Image 1 (cartoon, rainbow, N blue to C red):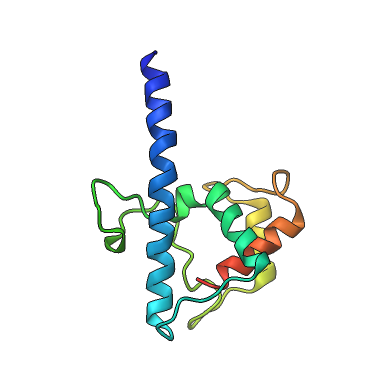
Image 2: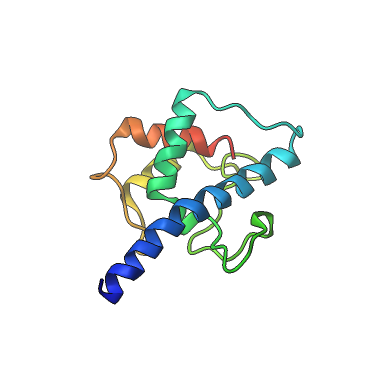
Length: 129
């Protein structure tokens, strides 16, 4: 097995463990700061969570480097999206949709990779963070 193949296997195996832990940490932080109970996701939000994990988590969740404590977080490539639709300056839903579709010089656009309904599901999930 080549070095590249070994690296790819390790990357795929660990990504299945690291990203869900990081997402749980981000979700737990937001839910613990609100009412103290874990929000129940509806079907659209669950679909959005899965799409977020596949398409967005690489950049928008903390990179847990040698840390077993997911709550400690870590650096991210893009901004954390917790509270995107809440707080002092909540983002307009249409602006977020356009941002996801078109992207920026630092973020790819997903207008050709995701259906509008899938982007709607991601937005529904982001509203729970």
